[in-house]
Image (cartoon, rainbow, N blue to C red):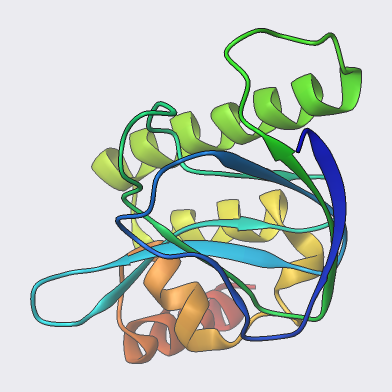
Length: 160
């Protein structure tokens, strides 16, 4: 298969947890997210991918996926088969490097900073998503409840 273009509608699932991990999605237009559900059915958003970003599951090609990936908006994608060898595509490498950097910072923040600082980091990392993503998804991404996000935003407004 190699590379193909794909148009998806809002809500369409591209990858279910437990599938074989063979595809990477490059977002040309639109917005994707990856998430998991815990044993109680609570959704935990792992990553957003707006235009220019790459979305995929980090497990190797032979493993079952840990994340579900869906479209938050109607999206235009480039779908690539995972390849163990680098093909030298600059856009792919830059997108992957950006994704890894965001993940690294997020993990460090989840361990060490307040909810207000996590929200401010979200705003600086994804400035265009604050208005595009439902608040309950932002709260899930930050590891707080929607009510907690409302409090964070209210406290931030008071502090300005």
